[in-house]
Amino acid sequence: MLDNFLSWFYEFMTTMLGGVWKIISNLFLGIAQIFGFATYTDQFSRYKNSFSALEWILSILCFILAFAVWAGVIFLIILVVRKYIRFRQSIVGSEDLLEEIADLHRDVLRLTAEKEKLLQMKLEAGGIPYDEIKKILAEDGREDTGVTVPDETADGEKTESDGIRFFRLNAVDEKYSYYVPPEYDKSMNLKQLCDDLRNYACYVSHLYYEIKTIRLMLAGLAATKMILLQGISGTGKTSLPYVMGKYFNNDSTIASVQPSWRDRTELFGYFNEFTKKFNETEVLRRIYESTYNDDINIIILDEMNIARVEYYFAEMLSILEMPDPEEWKIELVSSTWENDPKHLKDGALKIPQNVWYIGTANNDDSTFSVSDKVYDRAMVINLDSKGIPFEPTPTTSKYISYSYVEELYRKAISEHPVSNEILEKVSRLDLYVIEKFRVAFGNRIMKQLKIFLPVYVACGGDEIEALDYLLATKVYRKFENLNVSLIRDEIKGLINFMDVLFGKGKMAECTEFLLRLQRTF
Image (tube, rainbow, N blue to C red):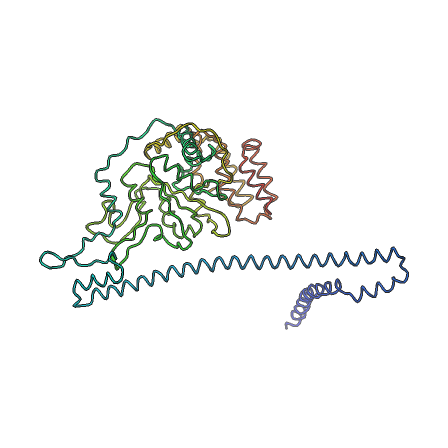
């Protein structure tokens, strides 16, 4: 019944598999023919008796050149294979090292916890006199262990400890008990602020930044609370936010990110169930202190991509995206104690608005690539060259409140709104990019655009220049994740389309990025 089908299927599969066999067999036959020295010898023997002296020389040269070429090809293949193997070994080695560091970190935490449990068992063992407890603590080298040891009263009775678990945050409460805010400077606009900050960096710290970099910094912080400074080493990535803290008379807090960072406890600390104390970090202390003042508070995440940003900073990335600032809260503990810090409500801390988070990133073999989740939420500033020295005007630091800067931002958005013409052109460009590259601008980028452009103009910049930079770092950067070899023919069309929309050569930053991307592949 199926004889005809089986006959056809047999011929069909025989033909297909025969083709596969021909590919394999012809490959090996070709290699065998290239290195068929017996054939070469036979061919040479048929002609050598009739060769003249010149023909003998030429034939020998042909042999030498031919085999030299093939020897070179084989050498290059071996070289490429060896380099690939070394490259893979280096990647695997780096990953193994990071995993080993993380394992050691976990082992240290585990051993510490076990040691604390053993100590607790000693302290809780019945019949141990109080003097003996103190002797045990002294022998263990832990006079200040954080363990809750009963206090003796005048009658010899033992009382509970004071129950303070946030020593640093409680110290902040005491510091601000009699705090008098400084007299803030409200005389400058955004353009003057950019010029003054640039002059201050040069005059006090001999740091030379282009005015465009300062404008991007302040405009970027209007659109988002997080800035990502990336580029080659030595271009002043960490120095810029550091000198900004000096300029605002409120030193920046620097958190040096470590390869072992895996979760939010590295950034904010954690509650130790045995000692009943919260291990507070300097970042947590700075955020808490910001709830008391109207200063501009800067937290620097130095080399933030030496660990995975989307792991340890994940909660903050989500919080900073919430539209209602009243919802910007992180839960530190699950319960409330009587002596908890004043601004800690039900174990949660409300993240204040007057904190800017500035991360630095080096792009090399020792770091992780920054994910789209981080790039989309942060404003990226590329520092790829050292600043050109200039003669600064003598400048002093200023007390400038966060509220005043926010007021300047709102004023800029009101006075320099993005024109309908620009929005219409951006909409047309968005449709073009979606059609040709399957990449969309997104609502988040459009929201940032409507803030970033007006503030950049108020800082003394040009609207098209700001749009150019935003598209290059926010939209076209996504092209790096595409198969550029398949879209490289479309890149020239995109550049021409931008020239038609915005004017020839106006989108210089975008054009340079796209051409560099095209040359890379």
